[in-house]
Length: 344
Image 1 (cartoon, one colour):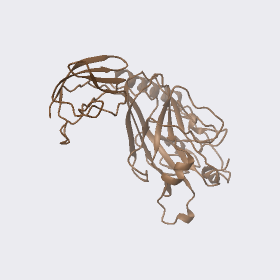
Image 2 (image 1 turned 45 degrees about the vertical axis):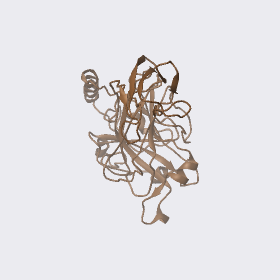
Image 3 (image 1 turned 90 degrees about the vertical axis):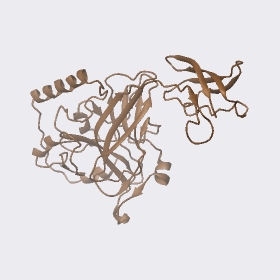
Image 4 (image 1 turned 30 degrees about the vertical axis):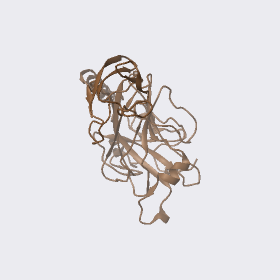
């Protein structure tokens, strides 16, 4: 499969390979694990800063030579989608194709440390729809009903086509296929800050989500289908669009996943008077069902939608009178019962 990166490799260059001393790898491993043990907010992504490797990368990846797999714990889930690994260690070679900050695809300082990874969000240069992704197995599976925050940073190495909906998908099973096709799915975390056009500064992508449970794998990339891509989510930033290939590439660094502890807050009063303040009985935690009853035991409201909250009306749409109402809130772990005062 020809893609943008393959073109850069049409001319054969000599390759050299360096090996990191075992002691440095061992020390990095120990430091990483000490961090896991003493941190109150443990990063569930091993080697999320891409510093640890078994062998220094020598080139960008090609089918059958996935250089990203030299970065400990990381892989390309679609084996013909050849995501890349870059590290300072390559700077000592004659051809710094996988070096930092200079490499075959551009010039970029790491967010921190010595390494980062990269992937083609899409490449339609030859009329096909080529994608690349980064994948890793989490240190521990995610737990049902718990809240997690993921963050990672991206930057594009050159002016041209950009996209916005770079995201992160958590799954119980890994993706492992001999293809370069898109993984079309709904990621739990997705960029919401618009088109990712910065060629100098690392841009943070961050989001929180509630785990279904047993998610063990994290995949980073571009998960929209081809139709949406070309109709809604491409921006050409080049002043001369005729010379720009329809493709978009991003470096990635600083991947972190932590469990977020939150305090359960259930309001004891709310005022649905349409003044824009405290008009809804809003909860700050995920639930399976909320029920509201009046003093005679009649149900006025029920919802299993975490974005739907009681607005002070009955099931028939009538305005409920001021007074005291009884709630039952069911989550995956607990049931909360109590009273809410409605004032207008």
